[in-house]
Length: 133
Image (cartoon, rainbow, N blue to C red; front, side, top):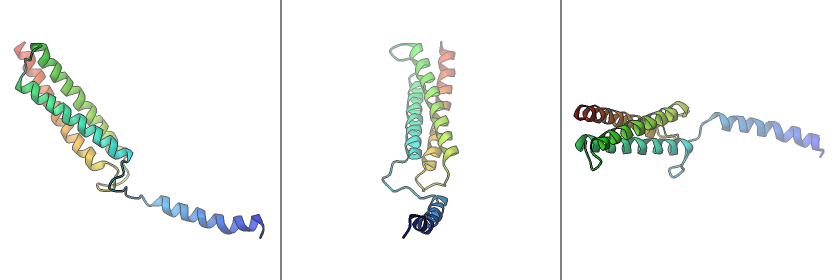
């Protein structure tokens, strides 16, 4: 059997199979950490951290550092929440499938919500610390 005959017999079948496989998005496994899941997890942790820091800034606006500590916590909550929202929005924009496929879209929605809560808490604490100072 010649190489030309072998290539014409095998290659079109492989190309057709590869096109069929690549057209269908595959769901990631349960324990697989895809890039979308990792990005959504980081965004959610950032948003949650910002929400905790913003809550602490609202509860105790003046710490050991004085009024500057309350402003610092509020600013940290704002910045970390904003980074979480941007990263969550990036994951939502780049995921090609719905929730439950392993692309991180569900976690990104959670990160968006928690990030917005962090921004709101940080903003309230910043306004409160400026009024007190």
